[in-house]
Image (cartoon, rainbow, N blue to C red; front, side, top):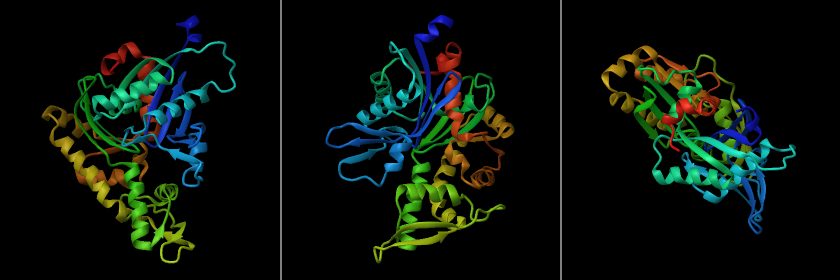
Amino acid sequence: MGFFDIFTQDLAIDLGTANTLIIHKDQVVVDEPSIIAINRKTGEVKAVGMLAQQMHGKVHDDIKTIRPLKDGVIADFQAAEQMLRGMIGMINKGKSRWFSPHLRMVICIPSGITEVEKRAVKDSAERSGSKEVYLIPEPMAAAIGIGIDVEEPMGNMVIDIGGGTTEIAVIALAGIVCDQSIRIAGDEFTSDITEYMRREHNMLVGERTAERIKIEVGSAMSELKNPPPDYAVNGRDLMTGIPKQIKVSYSEIATCLDKSITKIEEAILKALESTPPELSADIYQTGLYLTGGGALLRGLDERIKIKTRLPVYIAEDPLRAVVRGTGIALKYLNRYKHIMTG
């Protein structure tokens, strides 16, 4: 391409419920929370990404924070377009341009979304300035991102636990043979923690605090070999209305997440049940691959291993596996074009 590179800007985008990542020229140039702050009166965008996240739960009546994606799909079309435009603007910040480059995007989408939801993603990308938009299923992007040769006649199972959805897919010959997509993932875990704190400790905590608890002491098993120390949580006492602090342990959080993790296990077993026998034989050898932010939950790999009696591997840098795969698909567009929808 050489000379024409200055006229084209290729972007690989993981438009996630919790975080949006963008790769440009083989580098992750944007890694921001999927949130936007808007002035209610004027409609002006006040902040995008991390700055908007810092405002979340702390705003006054004139400002509202919006998470445009819910359960892996666009819930607020206008906010999604503004957020995408703002994040693309971060790439070119400080660069003087005489013209707008021709934008070409590859965006990953949950495998279980409808045609209408696909159209919403495509429209948002086009309205934020893209001339060419390609969509790639998340499990396929995750598999490419962790180094699996998806074109081989070999079965591999990828479990991508994101913010809004858990995508489970068996991949062979550059296609998804069978898959399960459930809307239970990181956001549901956060919601479980908020509810648990209210029910067991009479304490009201915000979404950001619950997210912090999940990171610090989140666990899928009530007994760990290397347990994290108890975590001090600040919140509002529901009885007195006064702020207070309590300490929570990882085993408490394991108890409150148990129901949601069980549903993920059931979906994995369902996907394994519907796998053709030849691919099942491959999966027995290759094992299961965990990607996405949910893969970082302590003890989750061990718990799935016990349930399925199969080897389970956590991808290297699971948070970026999907966007890495999307970036590779964009780089070798002609090779992977047949697995995308244009």
